[in-house]
Length: 270
Image 1 (cartoon, rainbow, N blue to C red):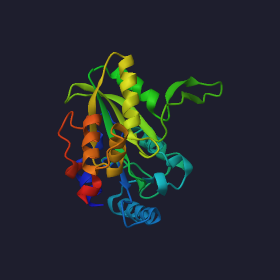
Image 2: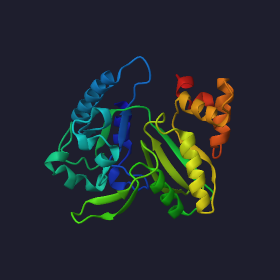
Image 3: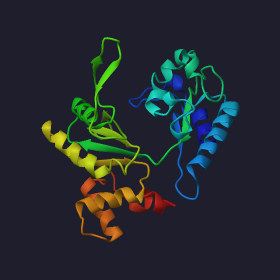
Image 4: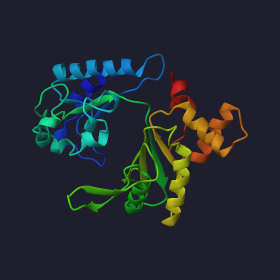
């Protein structure tokens, strides 16, 4: 709640522009059970938080993922569709009224999406090119939603399915580093492991005569995800520290900034 409060104080959505889709000063606030708490308990907490944000900060709140009250609100991208600029018309629709808070736009803060979900890994593949078209093409091929190919006779959007389940991906250009990235969200790293997507992105990049130079992890990562990668690249190794070191090397996690396990692995941080 305090983080959302500070975002509401410091960020004015009326002046905000950027590459990443967003609909509010605090765009999305996931609540994740790490240990010692059940998903149902976290869902209850999400309702308490949503109610408080709506009432005390006058920010419209939409519940998503495990907390979603309607099927069309489970997926973050679906709730965020139209972004901040589309909120006024979206909120006029009866089936898109917020779960908590006022049913009118908060011009400064927009709306906030929050809910309980499993651990998500935000992970970007670095390409040795500045060509955003290549990054977008790769993203379309790997993400679960696939590539948009047009509409049918009933004006329904049609997609070619992507290669991996539980994976969201977009391509963009990172000005600070001067490179294109394939930006991914892994919503189930056990179903779709990092290393398998890493190897596929390498193959697809080669088709465009470029390479994956490494990766950028945003936030924290569960230890198991790196152990799985380490065992993939070094199947006979059993020492956890060595497996983690192998994963960091093979995935190129120190490509842009040094990857320090004690600061990036959630179990070590706890």
